[in-house]
Amino acid sequence: MTSRTMGKRCANTVVVLDFETTGLSPDRGDRAIEIGAVLVEDGRITDRFQQLMNPGFRVDSFIASYTGITNAMLRDAPECSTVIREFAGFINGHNLVAHNASFDKKFLDEEMTRARSEYTGKFACSMLIARRLYQNAPNHKLGTLVKYKRLPTEGVFHRALADAEMTAHLWLGMLDDISNEYTMDNIPFSLMQRLGRTSKHLIGDFLKKQAEKALA
Image: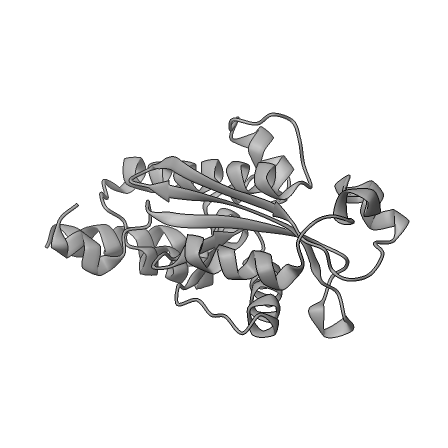
């Protein structure tokens, strides 16, 4: 990787993460109960992180059924602050990707604050980007996109590491599709962030202009 590419923080080297939680919002007292993440370097998965997290209270039956994570599984799990401090080391120096990133970022920020830890990477949302690239998909849930793009999967959903791995395959697939259609190599992370904020009807023109800039 050249110094010029390093300066742009190339989008094919990121940490893709996913949380399983006790509910929808840390503002309502919900906590993380599992984190899964994969390190993607130069377009391939090179490392993984997975850990259950004890939130300090019982998980209700709906969440246990939805995630497959039971109170018995969490009983001996380390507390959230211990896990999140370890995770801070795993993500150190990398930008971050999640499917519905606003959800995962809220929980990451909350758990980092509680653990008196921090991270420096920026987030990009694979769901927002997929909505712009794959406008003909039935919807943009992760499971739907996995089927729509025929991505690798073990058929397990709502466990953090499995969802992180599928999101990583989606992320790399989107990079490949952009590269192939617009003849762009070494796509910067900042471009993917901007893509997720661009109006759907402007996507083609936006990417054409970015490709022209890259060639200039």
